[in-house]
Length: 110
Length: 115
Image (cartoon, rainbow over the protein chains, first blue to last red):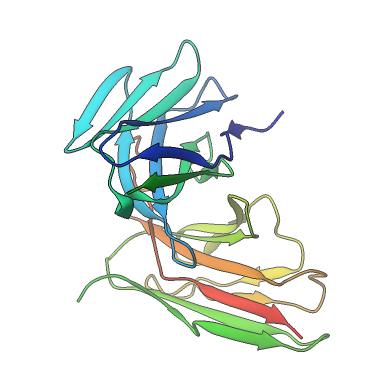
């Protein structure tokens, strides 16, 4: 079982719609959760971080964490073509280095 | 202009050669990390360092070596023992490893190709 799992996609949504990206993790001791966006050929850039159960909103982005079910999600409202990228879920375990999922590719259709 | 720099951007290596990838940060971060990314995959941890003169192996350390002689620098050497080194290498840093809110920021990456 992979430590952090994501659907590879592609997830295709029309412009203006809500994109929902999901991630599950196996280590119940995980404490910190991150979403990074990665454009093709570029390095990951931080989108959201979340540390406690519930929702955290930042502009068009909302991260949701449910530690009991061991999943974390990212919602992107009013999706734009510029949101088309691969979204990486990352989790910190005991050693504090990040463990990444393989990413979900999002395509926003104009 | 603060940030993390990696050089070179592209690197070509012949079979049997050792090569060193540079990573420098001027963010005054204590912790630094090296990850490897293969096409269509997530990042995998090679080595990390929490403090100068100390570093730990990650999940795929075989065939790699690092040093941390200065706080701002964390070079990665890809040795000839690494059988499949062609990949995108990413360096990251964070201010305070161990804190729940500690966040890693990435450099622009080095793309290594074995000829």
